[in-house]
Length: 221
Image (cartoon, rainbow, N blue to C red; front, side):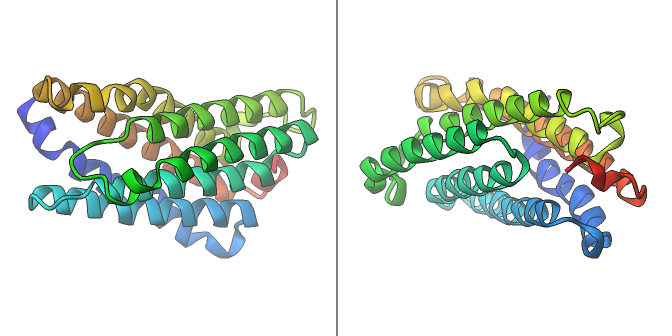
């Protein structure tokens, strides 16, 4: 357990290379949506590694995590707007984005100058939003008669990984601020679990990119 607590964040950062390398290998063949997703993964990798590096050297880094969550929210919202064709989905994403923007506007000072206070509501809002987006995606796919073998498409594995990670991270990130100064050891265990979810997510996404060599992959969006 001590090994996991010590190296789980580094392993989570390294695990990003699995889908990123696969994505870069097939980059020219990718649709715009998959290229956008690779961009999201790349920036997430950079910010997460920066968070790990600064944490390892005792450098204040809460603003980095705030930037990571805000970046992920807006770019994942953009991605799902491109993936989901229904008017309901597009309006739903617009409303969620508007609510998030209003909240960030009211809390901009704590976002830019977080001091030692971790804002649990931003990542929790992000996680809940992505969970709802994934549910909309799978609901649309189940009604799409053209997608016969959904498990043979990259997006199935990508969405499964994303849904697993954000479902697992929701409660962990929501309680982080409460337990940070009350039970720091407990938080360390929870964040170790969070990094394990991150690793599993990247493995599933990497598995999804294995189907890029199949010419049928692009029929599912």
